[in-house]
Length: 287
Image 1 (tube, rainbow, N blue to C red):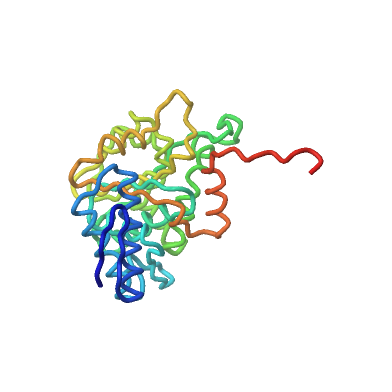
Image 2 (image 1 turned 60 degrees about the vertical axis):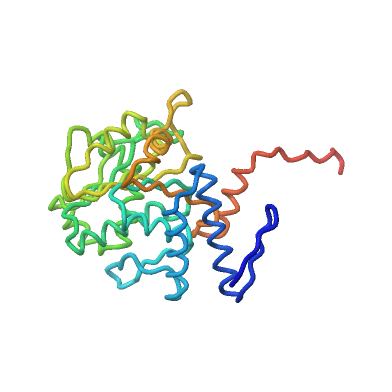
C-alpha cells in the first residue's frame, strides 16, 4: 500500500482491504483528536493494532463470555478501543450516547474479571438523580425508591450470569448494586467498581467515588453528556473529571459516538436528530 499528500488531501492506494483499514484508522484518529484536542503516539499505535487485530480474526476479539456460552465481542472500532482501555487501564472513563454499549461492556468485563479470580468483588453504582420525576412520590423506603435507578445495572448483569448465580453473589456480598451516596467512607480492595450515569454525579461526588479505589481495584465510569439531569447551575462531575484527568498516566478516557450505537438502528437516527441543533425551516402555510 502507498500514500501521497497534496495540501489537505491524502491519497491512499492499495488493496481494497488495506484502503478500508486505513480509512477506519483515520476515522478513529479524527474522533480522538476532536475530543481530546491532540493525538499521542500511543493513540495511533493502539488504533492501528485494534483494527488490524479485529480484521485478522474476523472481528474484534472477545472480551468475555456469558453463562449461556455467548462470546461478547466489540461490534464497532470505537467499542474495540473501549475494550482495549478496559483491559489495559485501572481507571477508565467512557463518554458516549445511548446505545453504544458503555455500561454493558463495563459489566461484561467486570464479570470476566470476577470469574477469572482477578477481582473478588463487583460494585455497581448509580447516582439517584431524578430525570423529571420526584423520588418522594414513589412508594416504599429509600432503597425501594432508588431501585428503578439501579435496575439497568441488574439487567446488564443478568445478561452475563444466571439469575440464581447473581442472587448468590449478592447474598454473599460479592456483587453490590447501590446508590452513589452509599459509597462515602469506603475503600474497596480487589474490586471492580462501575459508576453508571456518571454525568449525573457532581464534581464532589465524582472525586469521592474515584478515591474509593483500593489496592488491586479497577474503576469504570460511564456517562452521556447529552443526558445531564443535574440542576443547570451544577457542573457535571463527569465533564469535570474528563477535563482534570485527561493527562494522567494510567487513566484512559474513551469517547464513543453515533457510529458506535449498536441498538435498534432507529436509536442512531433519534440521537442524530436530537444532536442536530440547526433550526429547520418552517413550511409556508397552505403548502
